[in-house]
Image 1 (cartoon, rainbow, N blue to C red):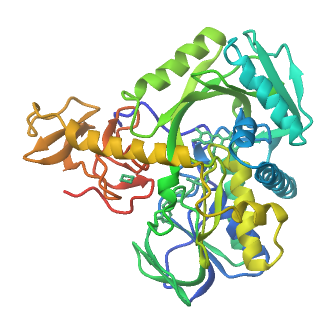
Image 2: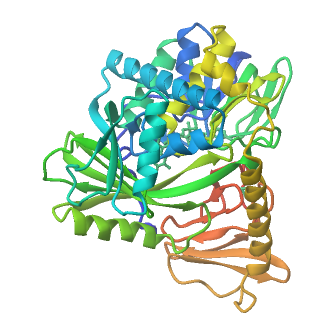
Image 3: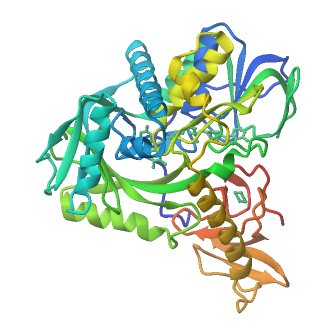
Length: 497
Ligand SMILES: Cc1cc2nc3c(=O)[nH]c(=O)nc-3n(C[C@H](O)[C@H](O)[C@H](O)COP(=O)(O)OP(=O)(O)OC[C@H]3O[C@@H](n4cnc5c(N)ncnc54)[C@H](O)[C@@H]3O)c2cc1C
Ligand code: FES
């Protein structure tokens, strides 16, 4: 019995029919892919189908981190992303973003049709339920039509509350992203590739071949694809331009009629709404209450709030699954994919999808695999060709200042009054000082553990996440279990004893 009120997502709450491979000593491979989420497995599947020798190494298990915990919408209308992007970047880049997402969506639709993966067609809807939110929806309608999407304005929706504005895009789809991952694993393995779970990469030496150090041994590869969420490499500094955003989801048993659409609000706190048809019945999936990782504690309140809101709006719904996950938003609003540093295309990265990775992650896979197989889409050239320093300078500086502020606050904020030897109450954790050293102390399942509170990535001070019984770093989003082992983020080492 765990103290955490969050458990498996609706999608991961079943035995996986998928077989993976055992670790073994490997000859040099054409491409080593790190990470078995949507980006890594789609890249591996594309390259394996093209006859490349491919190995995927996954630190935890297939889909364990973000892709297995999505809401599973595959859409080109993405909340208010298009107006945000149109305001932040040049027209060429905004068009390339839409082109990339369209290519990602088309590839995924072909894949699920060809491999018998279930999906539902739905109209994607961005809505506001307040007067203050209506202009954001109107801006999205304008940006989306300007960028070539056949969107329409709506006044009413099949939701139990009224809206002040809504924009809709028909012909989008929703699915179970774990079904997709399982199908991709099958594709990789049918074409001779390997997918190995429980192996974390810790270092990459670029060269001919590259040498990747892992928790099981070294692997040599002509190219390495780092599809690990936030790249763990300090080289390239990608983590400095990514904001880690955690959010929450709850699935409810749903006896009501199917929804016509899949919905996302622009008001704060945001709400994402879709239905899901499973072998054991129909569910309603409600998400929202996002925040920067390591902030907004106690986190349990974010989940309880989703349950209360749903009880008020959909009284027939009965909560069955609660979960949380994080994704990374880049300061220039666009995904990062391509060489880790200009000129080194032996190491390729894919990240920065701002919670829209089911299309952006596939686009990243197309762009990366096309570097290796030769046919480059124009949108990939445009997005990768933006100047390396091209980030919204103001927001990059703002993000840097925020990180520096969080670092100082973490080091200064450890409780001076608490005795480091006291055991916190069950399910709670606190950062205390032992001399000058901040120590993370928590009690979970009756066991009190003490670890260094200093994040092994770059020295941030972790904070307690009560909803998930984890230590989370507000700087770049690394998360650690109560015993200090890495759960996710750019850190690769356990919290020190
Ligand atoms: C709550 C929520 C809802 C979302 N809903 C949607 C949605 O409806 N539609 C949509 O398009 N997008 C959605 N997203 C975004 C989407 O889920 C993500 O963008 C996408 O899943 C990211 O995929 P990924 O492959 O980059 O990362 P992941 O799925 O996190 O995969 C990375 C993998 O790398 C592994 N790894 C990490 N470090 C190492 C290492 N050093 N060595 C080896 N392996 C390593 C991890 O264990 C992990 O399994 C949502 C995100 C969140 C948080
Ligand atoms: S994640 Fe970078 S310092 Fe913790």
